[in-house]
Length: 148
Image (tube, rainbow, N blue to C red):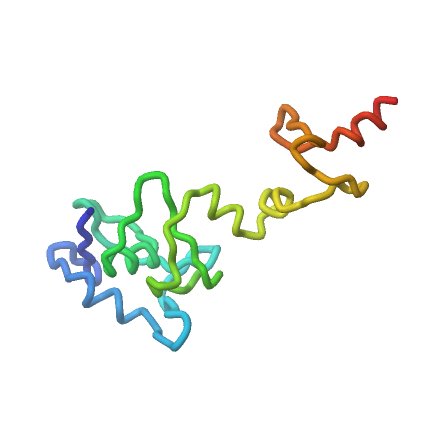
């Protein structure tokens, strides 16, 4: 596991242990533990620090997960089970693949993947749909009607 050291202010010569700086920006409640400092445009907490000897910006929920002893395997992501991007509570985070994380979201691709019927009401089963060149599911019944 990589080691984190965060710096206080602009002086990189005085590293501060992660626990001293990180938790001062966390507001703990009975539910989510919300990040109160800087956030990105999607609402995820950010903290500047030193990682592997280089100054960088880290994502707060990943730091929290690492501090609790969690490890994120290569190719995996953390999913917020509470759907709150500000939350850094380790119990609200789960290691999943990118595909699983996307399928749990409300993104257009996740919404379409959950559809069980085409827009004309035909069931989308493996025997009744094909995958086109772009990777989209196409209803075979509708395709036959279009071609006739």
